[in-house]
Length: 88
Image 1 (cartoon, rainbow, N blue to C red):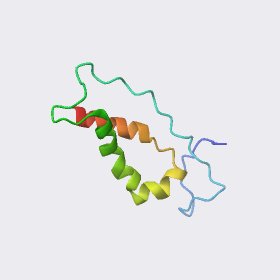
Image 2 (cartoon, one colour):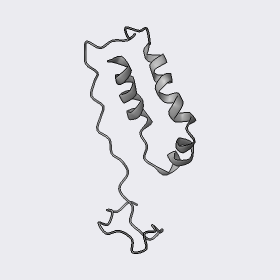
Image 3 (cartoon, rainbow, N blue to C red):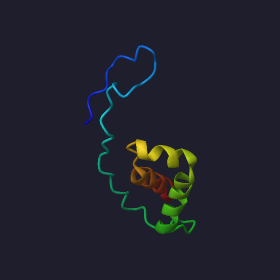
Image 4 (spheres, rainbow, N blue to C red):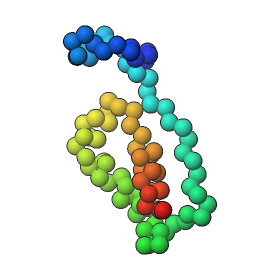
């Protein structure tokens, strides 16, 4: 069960099992892409390639491998944001 995160810092600066945890990340639904933006990009990148380009470095990252089980990380949000960057 998650409870609200205390506004005060732990006295010794160390978080323990007795400290409160923030609620899991809640993400809003992603906005649809602009209707004039279509795949493939002018440089020829299609949607599948864009997804691979965006996800590969994240999935291969040692930080992702170690931290993803402990965080409410949204790979979908990060991927779609990256793909939008490639599209525009």
